Length: 212
Length: 85
Image 1 (tube, rainbow over the protein chains, first blue to last red):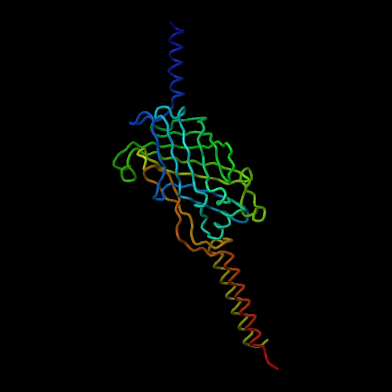
Image 2 (image 1 turned 90 degrees about the horizontal axis):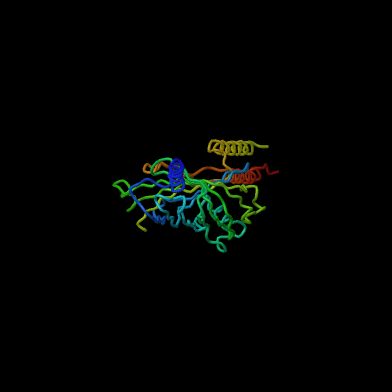
């Protein structure tokens, strides 16, 4: 009897650990689209060198993320894409250089993307807020590398406030990670000192599960 | 050096000094900017996001260009104001 109780307790704990997800009104599989035309969704990048700091931003983010609400850890899938030519740094000439063949070469490699592969760690910060360590394929300049990013996801059930932004339930995702440009064959020695090899990338986007 | 030439040099130095002071008080940026990123708060999610705001920031490149133009103009004026023998 003791062994049965012990096994039962272990199973309960295991189910709770491995089925971590949101505790919200919604249930089952949800698919969130991040095709925002209002400029709210964005990806930023930051480079710092003794010569100058470069801040960049794009608001043209597209993609979908899907998961089972009660089992995000075991079911999270999705892809986010950005048109490389949409990146801006506040200086037109610098933007042209950045998109040219010496740097991102946007004509040859028009898309930057991140494809989710698996969740490595998941922590519940609140009923509708999860912190995750996600492994995925990051592609830029035509080269794909597996990276690990820290992300925070906030699930908002549809209500009067969310309805002012978008129909349906909302999912807000924020994440920060660092990439090394030379890993992706982006290494322009002519202007090399003006841009750091390590680039901090931040993303902040909101999607809905109504597909628009 | 005649009086006109002295005045030309003094005015040129004053302009160049003013331009450098403007650059120092503008944040001593290397490159002139016409837009800056500002942080905004998303009240619904409690997160922050960034937006471009039109703002002119005087950079060292513009300072150098203005200084160069003043030096060239001053040189021309110095030659024009030279005493003809």
